Length: 478
Ligand SMILES: Cc1ncc(COP(=O)(O)O)c(C=O)c1O
Image 1 (cartoon, helix red, strand yellow):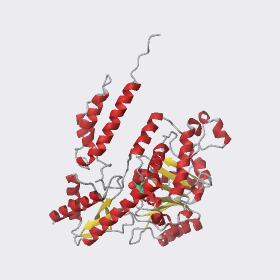
Image 2: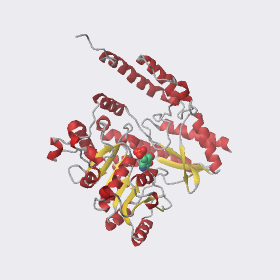
Image 3: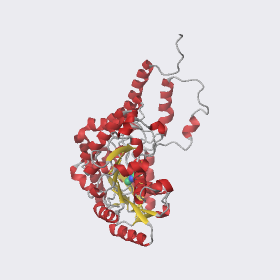
Image 4: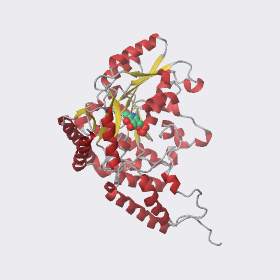
């Protein structure tokens, strides 16, 4: 038989290019501070530099890599720069990158236990580890009534929670018949916009999401929640879901989960807790108070892809009652039937999420936890919190600036006292300089700058430099 023609990359070439790729990434990390943090390309610039037609014949890998350097790199905003303080972080780390690479190499699709038992079992195990690591209520353990799953994002986690809440509130018939009653969801006016999107997707209708007022610390007012629920019941609609936030996106406010939880329990309303970034802080015992009241939660979510050094995407979603979630999301066509599922002895994570297919994401999380150990993770989280607190103190001591909200963890909201225009111009000039990148929000209807210390490699020298640059630009602002 003549040898079959192949266009595939040979194992030898894969090894060679793979080493080159790892070298490239390593060099990227060593020179990352030489790039402007915020990309300076204009809209359409990258596309204009790419050929309009795809290649008819394959190209050498070295040429592709050269284009990464020449074309792609200028269009990158460097989320992995230690001078990145914008939004919330989206961390990468050596062990996570290697775990992701291994996941790609194994190329597993873990929709069912049977389609790769290790994919399911490692995930269950690592999520149970995290219950202990964050000291979450034991009901979230897979060995109790609940369990955890890795999803892509907190938005998906909240959607799954909302769908389960909708089903539970309608005795699991709205999946069948559609929703024939008006269901109402509640969250604070400071909650992440994903809750609004989830309410739209779940079919509750945007007008049936109540945005509950917040206090002076931007945390939900439980008494306003209780009043709104009562008013809704009187109006004949069905309160079914409350989302409390631990660490809001704008200002890192922490909703009073114990009070909210008591209301939800009394009213038999599903309580979901969104701790997208800040949940990671609970790795440190002295910061665990942020999780007070979680014993009332029906579901909980946090993103290791934000602050736990695990590459995007990696969201951990926990439920207290896995049966409710599975009953909500499970559809079993003939072609997915298999013996293991029928024994009832295995988890099929396809029933815990919206898509069918799923990547082997727990590998990167496992690598991270094993590489750093609890000690290493705690060290870096504590360091970020210390650095943010130090920054907050500098702001507080500078008469030109004011703190715009409490800074319970690693996010500092501050503003120049000169007003919105001054703050906008200060931020624009800092970001244009390429020395650092920070973003804004509005608090009490005033433009507010946010500086979040959470990038894996941010150290004291970076935060000191950021403050120095802010002061320099502030001097020019007036
Ligand atoms: C509190 C909170 N919830 C949800 C999200 C949405 O995160 P994701 O991108 O994982 O959907 C964010 C994003 O920053 C957030 O801060």
